[in-house]
Length: 140
Image 1 (cartoon, rainbow, N blue to C red):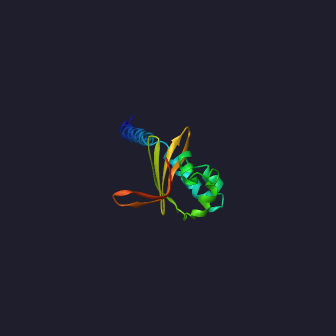
Image 2: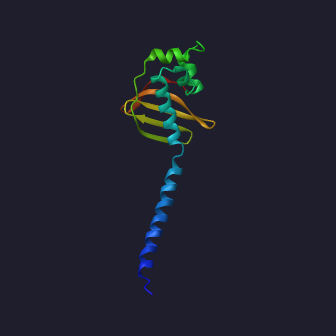
Image 3: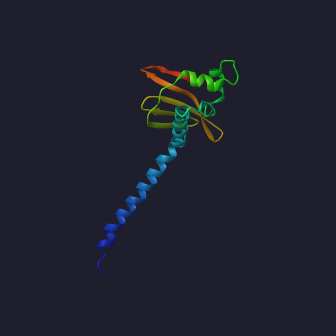
């Protein structure tokens, strides 16, 4: 009986198991990134389809309040008036505890975890080097 094949197979299996554990561990270090990206992408899709009301539902309460600036119920109108440009495809998404950043080809969004859902705290953001991002819509 030749034991050679089983000797070469064991390291391959072990390598596969270690790789699976490492990759699984990496995904748990940054949970929520896909969900945050989905929320930000849905916001842009809602605006592109003319559904500013649905886009407003994805904003954090403080962001809606700041956008409305004392005129309750005007979120959808003000979003539509802003004319935010399309964002393009998602380039990256990172979650840091209860906060996330989603970078698109032509936009950056910041989100916070509210219960089980991501809510947008700032969108229409462009980097300014070492300075904070400049955002068209922002709140807290």
